[in-house]
Length: 575
Image (cartoon, rainbow, N blue to C red; front, top):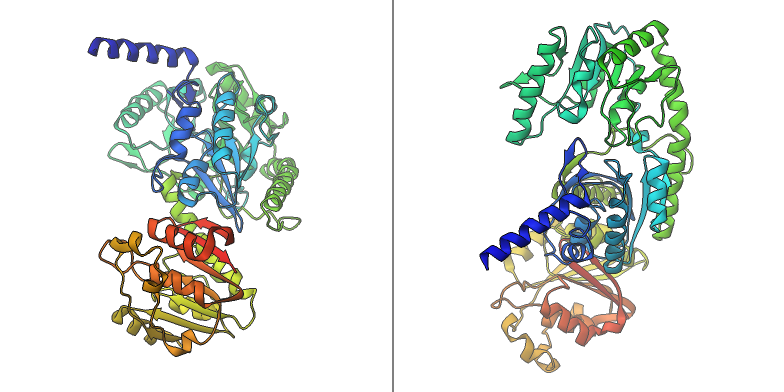
C-alpha cells in the first residue's frame, strides 16, 4: 500500500511538471497543474470554513458601496481575493476587476481561470467579474474561453503624484535597476554599464535571503562601481517606500528592466513618470505597452547591447518633463476606459456610477499592494465602516466600536431611513446602541436588555432612547422543544413596548452562543408580534441553528428580502 502511494505521488508530480509551471508576481514559482487546479479544488475552496481567509496577493478597494475590488491573479488564486472575500462576505453583491500579475500567454492558465470562474459564480451569483489584460494576446486567450476580458494594461495604476521628476536632482549613475535579486531579473546584463544603482527588496523566506546574498555578491564582483541604494541591515536591503524609490530613481539617467518574462512591471512605468528613459530587453508580459521609441530602447539581451542602449539614451538627453508628459498622455485614455468599466460594473451591481469626469481618483497610492488576504479584508472592513460613518454625517470614527460590519449595518440603516419618524426597536444593548440612536434621529428608539451591566452602560451613553429591562425564560438547549410552542415563548414586555407596533426591529439579543444562554427564541417570536404592517425585522447571527429555525417558523422564509454576511449573517424579513 505504501509503495502504491509513492508511485501515485511520483506520477502526480510528473504530470504537474508536464502541464507546466506558472510564475508569481516577482519570479518563477512552481504551481499545481491545470488538473489539480480544476473544478474539484475550486469547489473545495468555495466551501471552506467561513473564516478560512488564507492566501496572499494584490488587492485594492476601489468602491465601497457596492464593494468593487481590483485584484491580481496570484499563486493558486486565479480569481485573486474573490474566493477569500466570498468566504467572509458570502453572496453579497460585489464586483471584482482581475488582472494577471504574471504572463498568462500559454495554454493552461486561461482554461484554469475559466473553470474557477464558472465554479465561483455558480456558488456566488451576486458577484460580477471583469478581467483586464496586460497584452492583446492575454486578452484574446481569455476571450476565447468565454471570459469578460479587455486589453487594459494595469500600469496606469502607478501614481503620478508619487513618481515624478525631482527638481535639482543630481545624476550620479548611468542607470538604475529596480528589481529583486532573482535569476529571472538577469542583473548580469547590466554588468557592462559603467555605473548602475540598484533598488531591491527581499522576501522573508530563508531561501530568498540566501539567494539575494549570492546574486548581489556576484553583481558587485562583476562591476565594483555598481551600488545598492537601499539601507542594509544584517546584510539584507531594507524595503523602500514609494517616495524613497522615486528619490532613488532621480539619481540615475536611465531605467533598466532586463527580465525575459514577468507581468506588466510597475517599474517600467515608475521610470517614465519620474522622467527616465528606459532600456528593456525583448519581453513577454506587457511592460512595453506604454513605451515610446524616442526615449525607450528594446535591445538584445547582451551586456554590450544594454551598455550601448544606455549610452544612446543619455546622448539623446530627452528632458524628463517631456518623458513624463508623453507618458501621462498615453495612460490618460486608459484611465478613462478603466473608470468607465468601474461605472459599468457598479451599475450592474445596482449602484450608481461616480467616476464620470473629474481627476484620477486613485493617485493617493501606487499600484495594487500585496498582502495576506486576511489583512486586505480587515483593511476593507475599516474602510467600509469609515465610509458609512461619513455618509451618515456621523464622522469616520462613529462606527469604531460597533461589532457589526458595514455590510451588515447598511440594510438596517436603509430600512430606518426609508421610514421617516421610524419606530426602531432593538433586542440587545451593546457598543452599537448610540449608533442606532443617531441613525434614527427624529424617530423613536428603544432597547430591550436582560443584562443589567449592559443596560446600565447603554443608559449612560444614550441621549433620548429608552432602555427597558427584560427577562428570558429559555435556554438554547431547549430550542427544539420550544420551536412549536408559541405559548411558552410569550414575553412579559413593558407597556411602552407592547402597546405599539414597530417599523424596524433588530434582533441582536439576548446571548445565544452556548446551550446555557437564553438564545433568541423569545425575541424572534416577540418581533413577529410587534412589527408594524409594512415594517421589517432583522435577525443577526442568522447562520446559527436557533436563529434559522425560529426565523423560518415565526417570521416566515417567504418574507426574507435581504441576507448579507459580515462578522455573521444578517437576515431581513419584510412584513
